[in-house]
Length: 139
Image (cartoon, rainbow, N blue to C red; front, side):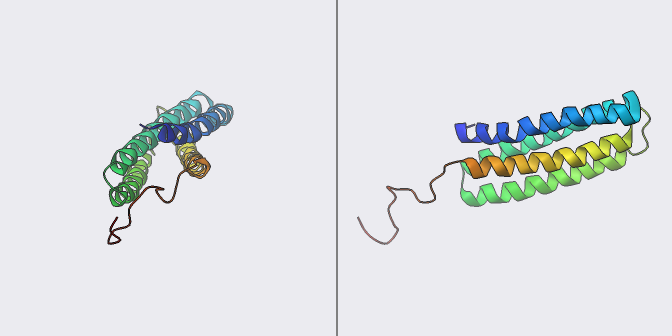
């Protein structure tokens, strides 16, 4: 990962962990130990899914901008579907509180997405390469 990618990852992960701790506390207050456990599992799930997604997009960005765009859209779609399947699979579990888990996943996904967007907006990236050659213009 390049330095820019690490900054975006930190920009998304730090607020997600902070909100995740709040989600664990709120879930513990309203749903006891099972709620806190659900929020902890949700935090781990969101952090893992979205970190892997960012790594995939970073890797595809080295290939071409089109590959980066395609991998970003596809990885987001896969993550959302996987999270929906996970929520559906654990809706009747008794090990942890499924409502605390579901709400934590939703809130943490939104926080991660906004953190990632904020991280990208804070980057100072050139839109045009200063020393690039224009095709068809000769030297």
